[in-house]
Image 1 (cartoon, rainbow, N blue to C red):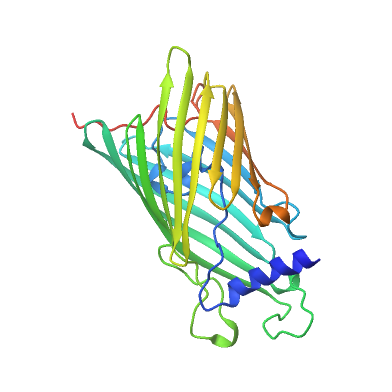
Image 2: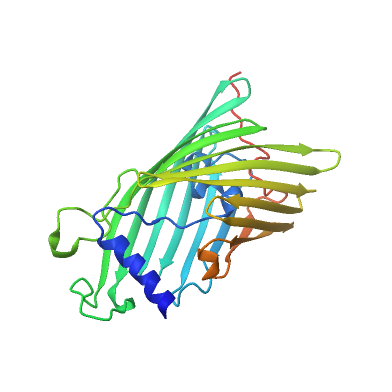
Length: 314
């Protein structure tokens, strides 16, 4: 009960504070398999098209209330390969707070030098923000806790870029560019409750040996907001025969990440586990994330870095 009340207090504080310091966007370990979840410039990057269903259970045992994220996403190259589209439907549930929405993406690609392409992407995010007072328990009367369910529909926008060839890639994105309001402040205070801008920088390289059919990838992700320090993820992944892969990562908030997956026919399954050996880990179990991928074309590779959509300038 102490743990539950503690986390509820944190969520309440994030809503009523003049500035939001807590994390508003869900953690996602499987962006290395499905990068459009953090950057719209990745839509239409690969000629391999798929539909990806992902579900994440965060910090199991930390609270009585569920902390979970579910999404279904897809992207596709249009007839003119310079243009790509994508979409994602998602639901993020964090105790008394839930965020449900749809993200529509568009990207435009062109050659810049050598075999490198540059992709610019933008997305429109229509969402509903829900704050349920009934899920809070207080020892004494609090005028902010009114026993109501507060809902608001709004929109925001994301922007990203990606420089890539068949070996190296580097991209950056801004999520919640508009910083739209989520719900009204108590007693009509002038300072709004907003989604704050999040900045992502994702890059790495990959190698694949056609003779041994073994691939290796190393990547990193930097995340930043105006109120938080950089968070760093470092990942390595090994692919065997395009059928089975293993991954290992480190996140500088004292988390170790492991993942594995396999492919059969037009389906792949990916499982990831985040284990926190810091302060949070002493109060909770690990986080689990699953992904189910369906390939729209038979024989498509799971790895988005294969069959890349590279526009030539000749």
